[in-house]
Image 1 (cartoon, rainbow, N blue to C red):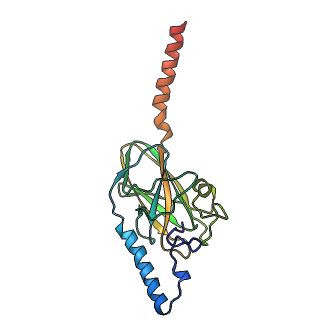
Image 2: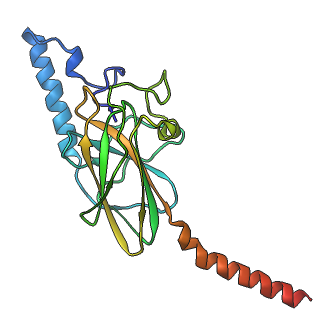
Image 3: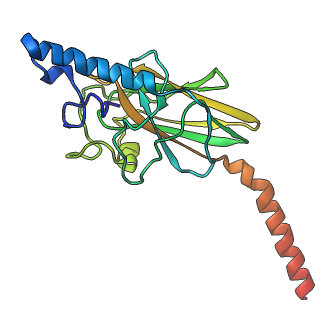
Length: 212
């Protein structure tokens, strides 16, 4: 996903593409680049438990080959829905679940999900042209619009029971960017509801017998 830190379409982001390279302005570029680097480095990796309830969690990322971090106050807020921005990796939870990841903002970023340091899988291959199309015109911060856009990178991963510890690596940056933000959610794995459904049906049958 192209990001809020480097998307040239937003005044809230920084980009070397729009900064001249001579005299004092060259030094300004260096200062801005250092600020981005320090912002990413300042976000500490403190594990947080995430609810398995379908809520969305926004994360910050840098260059390809590095791992996502907490937003730390540097992410552009999302819409439809609004994602929380405070949780930090590794993101932990227990039990079977389905994890969904989707890129936001500038399309072209791609990710790999890890669980307990073991690779789970890559998100889909995006169109990497540095465009923003979810929606267009827009900032690219509409989660459901980006999730429905096949040109953005997405991934849906089913995890079994037990304790989980998620981290996300950036495997590709969007064209013209070096950082960004994306989101993920964790929902219960459908089979986890089977025993509850069975208990419910058994209880309903017993209630009907008692009513006769």
